[in-house]
Image 1 (tube, rainbow, N blue to C red):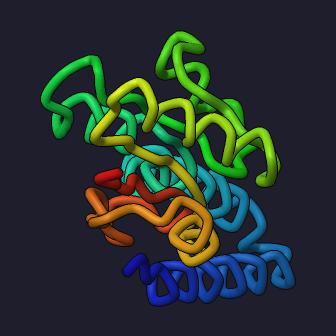
Image 2 (cartoon, helix red, strand yellow):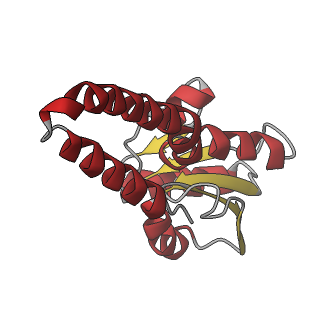
Image 3 (cartoon, rainbow, N blue to C red):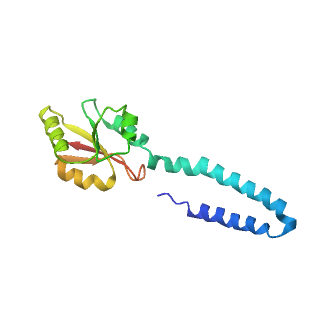
Length: 161
């Protein structure tokens, strides 16, 4: 979904060409200016293109905004399932259940939520852990709220208990 290879190859070829100019004594001044211009170009592209396009995949801001948009009330809790990234705590003001590891504490928490009448729970987790969550939570229905295009590191899942 993010393909920067052509741009990076272009910058690489430009760097090789500008570096080759240093071999000719008469062109070294031009090579110095060229290398400076190339450095500015790479920095500008990195700051204005690369970082904005990759940031959603490494941060949790968009995933957390999706939770607040999708939920119907504050009675639908958010759970960090097998997460230790700390972004989930930052974006929620540390108002969420956090389970760094799965096991008895998680299953007890789910049992208690069911007993208290909680019908919907949202989970933020890494996409590779969705299968394990489904097996352990045994919800009636599942829906992935976010997509891999929004974030390839984190997914928001809505579970009906």
